[in-house]
Image (cartoon, rainbow, N blue to C red):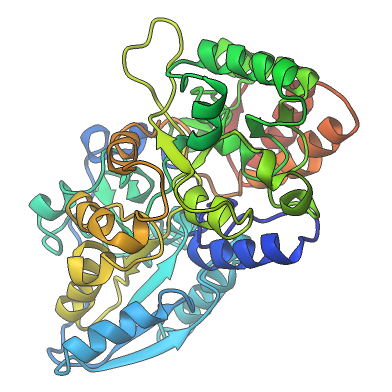
Length: 465
C-alpha cells in the first residue's frame, strides 16, 4: 500500500486492532510496499528528453555489493545469494521505507556529504523514487541509476504490467523496478451471493443498486468500507479523481470538485446513509469480530483475499471470489486503483552495476523468486507463475487469475507518485469527518485544502481546477 497498505507497508490504521485483524495487518504491513501512488504519465520517457547520458563510476568487477532490504524481502535476497554463490554480498535489514519512513533518504544525504557508504541495491517505496531520481544539489548525481540506460533491456522493462513502472519514471528515464502491485478488484462472498440470488456487479450503477438492496433485504451486511487509511486509493483512485495528478513535473492538480471525484463521493454517501458501506475501517478494532462475517463485497486490492478475508476475517475457504473492476457510464474499459507495491533501486554510485542490476532484475522478474512472493508481481510473466502457485489460489471460490490480470493493466496512472503520502490528509481530515456523521462530498473541500497545503510545503505548484 503506498501509501497505506498492501502487504508491505501494510494498511496503516489510526486505531488498535483485534487479535485476528492485528495478525492480518502485521502480514499486510510486512508485505505492502509503501506503495504510493503511481506517477503521472507526464513524467514518462515519451514526454521527456534532453537529459545527459548516465555516466557510471569506475567499475570493479567482482566487488561486494551491499543490499538493503526490509524483513519481508530478506528471504528473497538470501535465496539469490544461495543460488549465486559467486556474487559477493553484504545484506542489511532496514524498514524498507514503510509507513513514510525517511530513513533511507536521510542516510543517502549523509553518504552524499561524506562521499561513501551508499548501498548498491535497495528496496523501498515509490515515494522514495521521487527524491532518489533527482540530484540532491545542482550538478550532483541522483542516488538511483537510470535502469533504461544500458542496464536493463527494453524487452524486460516492457514485460511489466501496463503503467506499473510509471512511479519509476522521471525526467525521461526509469529509476526502479516494481516488485509488486496491488491492483483493486471487486471482492465478493460467492456463497452468499448465490444463496441470495444476487448477480455480481459489472458497473458502478449496479454496485450502488445492489448496495441499496442489501441494506433493505439483509440489514447489517456490507458492500464496502471507507474507514481505512487507504480507502481513497480503492474508491477515488478507481474513479480517476484528480486528487494527486501531476500534470507536469512540479505541478500538482488537486481538483476535488471534478465530476470524477463527486460521482464516487455521491455514490458512497448514498451507501453510507443506507448503512451498507461502513465508515469503520476493515482493520479497525473489533471489526473482524463484529462484522467480518457480514462483508458481502469489498472493493479493494488484490491482497485483500489472503490478508483481509482469510487472515483477518477468517472466512472459510471456497467462499470468496474476485471480479474485474467496475465501469462508469460511457466506459467500455474500466480504470482502477492500487493499494501497495514496493520497488527495487540500483545505486548510481555502485562499483558493480552488473551484479547489482542482475540482483534487482532477478528479484522482480524471476519465477524462482516471484512464484512464492507474498503479493502479486508487477512483472507479467512472473505474475502468471505466481497465479499458478496453489498457495495463491486454492483459498478462493473461483479462479482469480482473470480479474487479477485484467486489473493489473487497468490501474489509472493519473494518481501521481508524490513526495508526500496520500494517506495523511485522508486520515486527518476525511476519516474523522465521516466518523462524526458528515458526508464524504461535504468533506471534499477540506480534503482538497489539506492536500494542497501539503503539496506546497513540499515545493509543488498547485492548481485546483
